[in-house]
Image 1: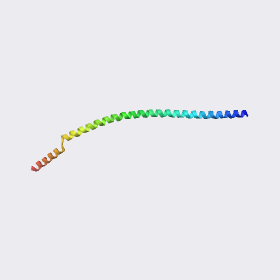
Image 2: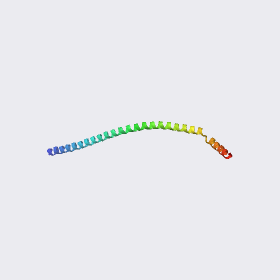
Image 3: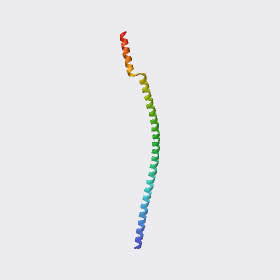
Image 4: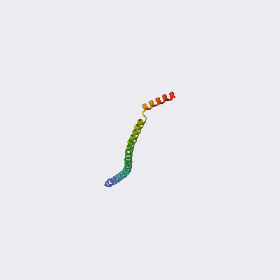
Length: 99
C-alpha cells in the first residue's frame, strides 16, 4: 500500500515537472517575443524622431515660402495697380479713336 502511494507521488511529481517545463518554455517564448517587439518599437521610435525633425524643417521652409509669396504679391500689386491700369487702358482707347 505504501508502495502504491509512493508510486502515485512519483507520477504526480513527474506530471508536475512536465507542466513546469511547459510553463518555462512558454515563458521563454514570451520573453523572446517581447524582446523582438522591443527592437521593433525602438526602430519605430527612431523613425518617428526622424519624421518629427523633417516636419520641423518642412514647417520652417513653408514659412519662408509663404513670406516670399506675400512679398511677390505685394510687389506685383505695387507695380500695376488694377485701377490705374484700367484708367490708362481707357485713355489709350480714347487716343486711338481720336487718330
